[in-house]
Length: 114
Length: 116
Image 1 (cartoon, rainbow over the protein chains, first blue to last red):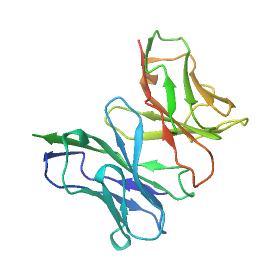
Image 2 (cartoon, one colour):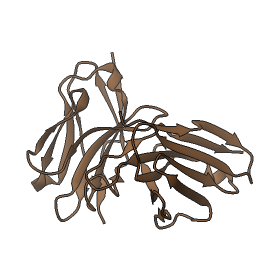
Image 3 (cartoon, rainbow over the protein chains, first blue to last red):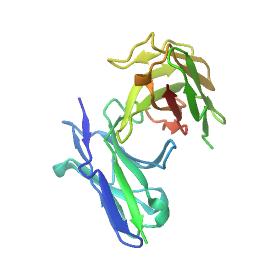
Image 4 (cartoon, rainbow over the protein chains, first blue to last red):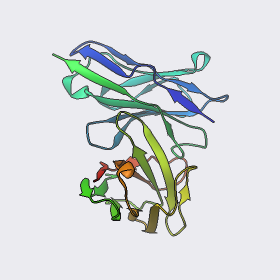
């Protein structure tokens, strides 16, 4: 079965600083990969996805992620963090096809300080 | 577009009662709906997948008789927690999709269930 690891439970960055959230997956073939964001007490919003093609994918709110097959990683990046980016971020993987049967990582909580 | 409304957002009830949570797709037809459970500081765990007009498919370890799922229309799915107990307290999130691998899941804002 596929699994997703987010090694950082909690990250604090200063507003305006760059951000990288780590995500590693365990699966023999190339899975479908996602990043979601969850604000407190709310559901999830899709930031970006990788299905195939260009390994650097652009998402909403200025986020991007790079798929590295050799490292089984799909790290999320943003060059300049805004206070409104404070939230919980979930990496997710699907092997059954597309958006169905998604397995989520344990999440990384992002705190942004002035 | 692709708005999913979940109701109620917060419910507190006594142990032994049953609680129904609604998940509605407001501006699209949701062929498939998913129900997740999220414990504090943990990830989302898929409980079940339901396709409109069919019985839900439950994940291993999820009690079918405890968590009743109905998906009778293309815009509404309900999750009923029967005879709820304190250990059922959690954050429940639904998502809806137009179906198929290429259709994204659109998430509701979740329901916080507290059983006293």
